[in-house]
Image (cartoon, rainbow, N blue to C red; front, top):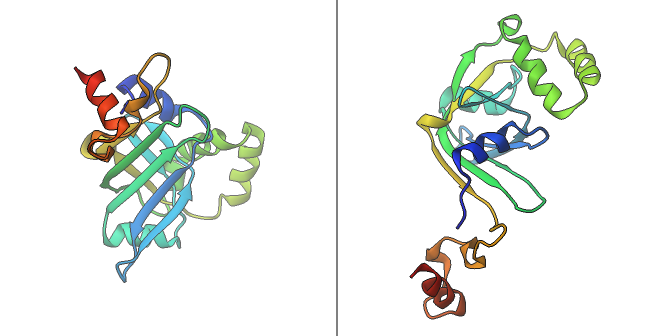
Length: 174
């Protein structure tokens, strides 16, 4: 299956509007999945949970997480990460990293609207959390493009033995 090159991965993560879907573990062991705004900077994914967010409490208790960033239009690029959260800035230190908060907001809304949003929410303390991609398990995927074989859309283990797709993929691999 086609994977994103390092350059394609970084370009994709830097594109605006893709939501990060973050999975954490609740105190009772149940998974919690939330969509959040993010930015990609210096090989890390950064996001800003509010002080009372459940997923921040989950990450304080257990920093393990999974996240997914994907897109709807072709070529259906997808990034999946299993890693650990690091709280880079604690609640109440927002002034030290407000430029990152603005950067994140500007990925999703126009700069003027982002400035209004920041002004309206400046009294809502947040933490800044990072996930270092180099220290995480990262997998990527996209649909075949141009002249790439269509049998590359799945990992080989998904082809049922003896199926037409398995046979086609076997011929193309030789």
